[in-house]
Amino acid sequence: QVQLVESGGGLVQPGGSLRLSCVASGSIFSIGAMGWYRQAPGKERELVALSGASTNYADSVKGRFTISRDNAERTVYLQMNSLKPEDTAVYYCNADLRVMGGSWMNYWGKGTLVTVSS
Picture 1 (cartoon, one colour):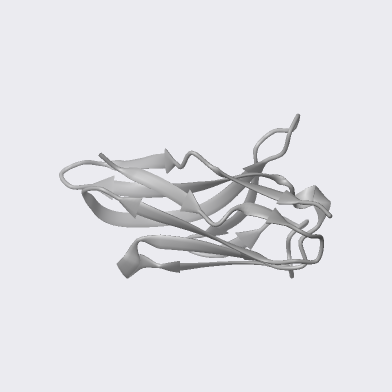
Picture 2 (cartoon, one colour):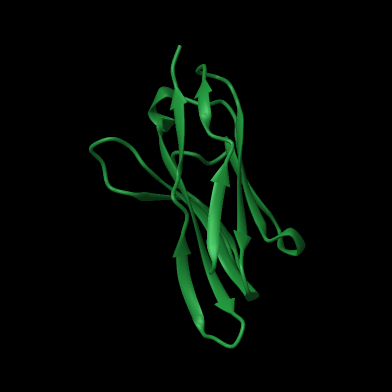
């Protein structure tokens, strides 16, 4: 069974940093685009950063967040610096994966909570 498991969330003060990780596990043949989304209370889920044919960031995080990946380790990271209270949200990992003997499908992790507060 294919899974995406996030880690690294927590409570951080404004101006602080966190690094999120997401590991893909299971019978994976190929990995396509990988990205991070977030959903704040009362708001819709939004794209934060995407690593695919190109790298894209939400305007609100440009210059503060950096997405990177290690395909050999099936892992995508999100380095978050200069965190603001408005970055508080549940952060979800998303990936396009091709399983052994199967086709490409899109997967979501269960999310990790990031709280930015003093």
